[in-house]
Amino acid sequence: MGAEKANSIRDLKEAARRRLPRIIFDYIEGGAEDETCIIRNRQGWESLEIVPRFLRDVSGVEQSVELFGRSYASPFGIAPMGMTAITHRDADLLLAQAAHEANIPFLLSGASNSAIEKIAKVAPSAWYQLYVPRDPAIRADLIRRVADAGLGTLVVSIDVPIYSKRERDIRNGWIRPYKPTLEARLEAIRHPGWVLDYLRRGIPYLENWQTYAPPGASPIEVANVYAKQSFAVQTWDILQEIREQWRGPLVLKGVLHPDDAARAVDAGADGIIISNHGGRQFDRAPTPVAMLPAVHAAVKGRIPVMVDSGITRGSDIVAAMCMGASFAFIGRAALYAVAAHGKPGVDRAIAILQQEILLALATMGCPRIGDVDPTYLRQSVKGAAA
Ligand SMILES: Cc1cc2nc3c(=O)[nH]c(=O)nc-3n(C[C@H](O)[C@H](O)[C@H](O)COP(=O)(O)O)c2cc1C
Image 1 (cartoon, rainbow, N blue to C red):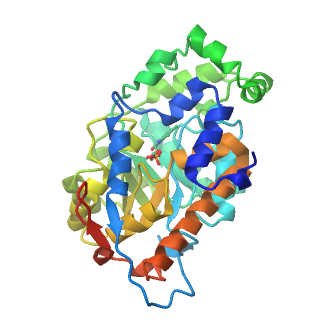
Image 2 (tube, rainbow, N blue to C red; image 1 turned 180 degrees about the horizontal axis):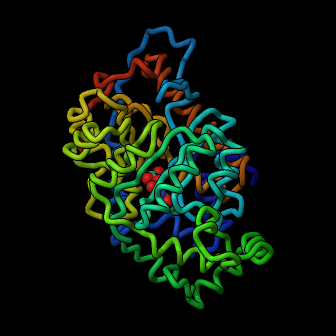
């Protein structure tokens, strides 16, 4: 089945499930410990009911938004995801290209397989996400490379002070030093498309890190250099250092507490992303829907408050914006798409969400995304506050 047959992000997810070995699918889909956070993320979005207003002219629906001085076609982008090449060898490039063509932002991960300079060539509109390395010289060099490559926005992920406990990966042997169980290997053989690609092209590099490893280092040796640098003891002082080195828009990703959001504004951040890392880091973390009202109140409109975690429908994005979010990001939704169908899959995922946003705006009687507000929301029984 081709990408064009997919009607929803769920269809793309099922197509990815078919193409990928279980061990790889589990790496994408899974979360920390009991994975309750992943379930609550979905429940949070689903709990938000939008009350339509009818008898309004919705013949021209507009979903473009302004962010950091530029106009994007839609109010969402693609969140940073590391090690995407294990799903599809050219995943970073294809995600970046699709996002660039659609005029939405693609965030290149701090654990990406493709190099900053390579992505900047195909998608100059991409942003870069930094996992703060221990060595100040390396972090300064990465920031310089991002600026030299012309990528305009730097995102610092603050929500990984330590590796998390993902039990699917532990069970499958998909943790360093990566010794997949016999069962996982045998299951992988049932996905020949993926296996042939892997055998043909070998283990992918973390390309950004090759330059910090000895010449000729293997992909595993480069990954070891990265692992040794992960993660610096992140403090507000380090953020200050980064703020001094980076002139463009600086975004903090992984903010959950309203006090941290207010402090981010004081520290000179230009935006924040409320995120629980898609439930991958801390199973007790609150959902973005639960935290958005308090964070929004703490920020007081001084900088854009963006959001991710659990978004699979265009109406989730519209509901987030009704709650005061300025922008949203999709993680797994895009990764399933590229894993299943390459670039046509990502094109399709973007088109599906865009159409769902259009449908939501037209049905709720609010033709401009910029005009949505909390009065469109009804707090449902399960639900979070508007
Ligand atoms: C496979 C995978 C890898 C990820 N890698 C990173 C990463 O390198 N940096 C980062 O800031 N977030 C990373 N994330 C988190 C995403 O940026 C995003 O916060 C999350 O996926 C949003 O939730 P969703 O997948 O439910 O949309 C990763 C998520 C996934 C699924």
